[in-house]
Length: 71
Image (cartoon, rainbow, N blue to C red; front, top):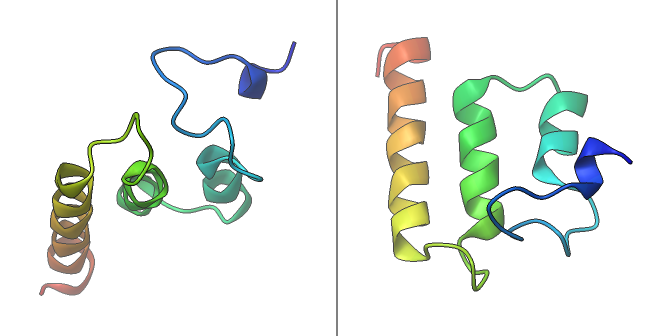
């Protein structure tokens, strides 16, 4: 069985045509970019955390700006 078919702790991405991890890996994105993709993918799902996911994604983008571009 593929690890992509195994879910531990939630069904955030089960209905997605492509799972965030597949997109992240295929595009060689870094940690913060990956976190943003995952949060934006799940924020509106019943198992997501809505506003909190969006606020965390914004924070991760701010971190990315600071760390990569010196804000």
